[in-house]
Amino acid sequence: MIKVTEKLLGLYRKYKEIIHYLIVGGMTTVVSLGIYYGLVLTVLDPKKPIQLQAANIISWIGAVTFAYFASRRFVFESKNPNMLQEAGAFYLARVSTLVMDMVIMFLGVTLLGFSDKIMKLVVQVLVTIANYVFSKLFVFKADKQ
Image 1: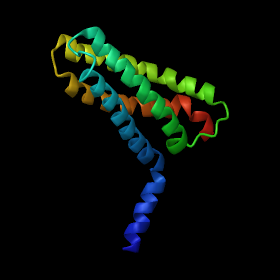
Image 2: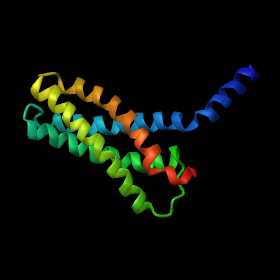
Image 3: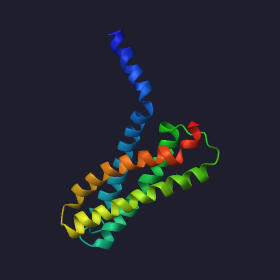
Image 4: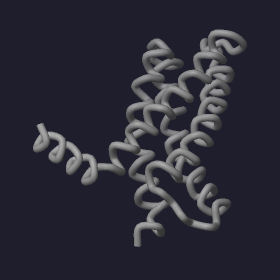
């Protein structure tokens, strides 16, 4: 039993950043989907392209704000004193995945007629992967040098 525990702890230490990113990514996805579904089930109509994209943008802003603070603290353990610059870089890195999100949602929902709920789930997986890569390579890289 102790050997299994030691092995699991070793794997955790080795992959701590990725494990924490997946947890934060999952929580960020919940924030994004919660805001998105809350909007399209109450005040915005996803069948209207402008309202679909408005729901997407609003959910993106909420999710990115949550993701920055959670990633800074729990994933990358940033000690960068210039939070404004770091947050700016984080948001800029996320703009590319927002565009990716919007294009895929437009193609899948508006042009191809797929369910916006299903497409949003698919997009979240792709966005989560891209966001880790951008955060690791461009936003929090200075802390690891």
